[in-house]
Image (cartoon, rainbow, N blue to C red; front, side, top):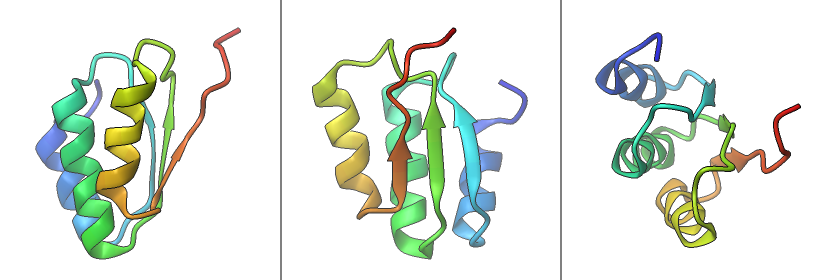
Length: 76
């Protein structure tokens, strides 16, 4: 994690779009970022999501109101 969750939330809340490698981030942290994207309209792409259950990814998507793209491709 190069940035703290609070820093990412601030960027997204200000309208900045991000690509986030999910490795090392908790589900709750990603939901918080997703909620910030919902409020600001910023687009966020989540990569490296293989470690999350489908229900967890659904929770993230629901919190984002359509502003999150979840990359489900396996790492190579």
